[in-house]
Length: 177
Ligand SMILES: Cc1cc2nc3c(=O)[nH]c(=O)nc-3n(C[C@H](O)[C@H](O)[C@H](O)COP(=O)(O)O)c2cc1C
Image 1 (cartoon, rainbow, N blue to C red):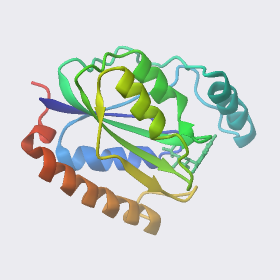
Image 2 (cartoon, helix red, strand yellow):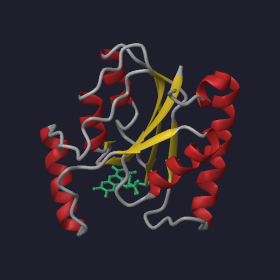
Image 3 (cartoon, rainbow, N blue to C red):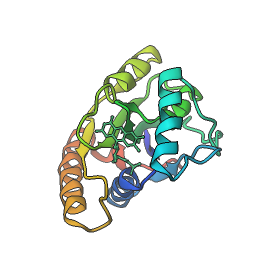
């Protein structure tokens, strides 16, 4: 069984973590992006995100054809937006078949993750997948590569990865042939 990392990140925090996981495990990573990019202005971003979250809207993605068939383990990375997993990751979940897979979520947030984990657990349960070993990282708004907050987040990620490697062994570092 091989492993894949799938990640959405708007301001880059979750992306930094996904890069670190990629380096440590040596597995493939796919960054997903909304077809209509999120606005850069905070006010406009808030407006769109609130509309998506409240309306249960799933934004179209630029690359809807990422194929997760053949992967046994999927690391799923996303930020928490308005107490929910950011909508693009929900689009991705909705367009793929998850039956029998093991999903390992990692998420970043400012401090309140709300339904950011329970929602993923519910969606995966309904799709016949299991969710395990989640990582929830609380990070400041302006975290950048190599600043103190980032180093702390990466250290926590490393301890989490140590546990995952102990638990799943070499399965977790296998790339799809
Ligand atoms: C529109 C929006 C809504 C957010 N809502 C929450 C929230 O409900 N709880 C929280 O702890 N952080 C919230 N945040 C902060 C992000 O989760 C946090 O900055 C995250 O690390 C961003 O990840 P990214 O850089 O990978 O996009 C929100 C950020 C944005 C832009």
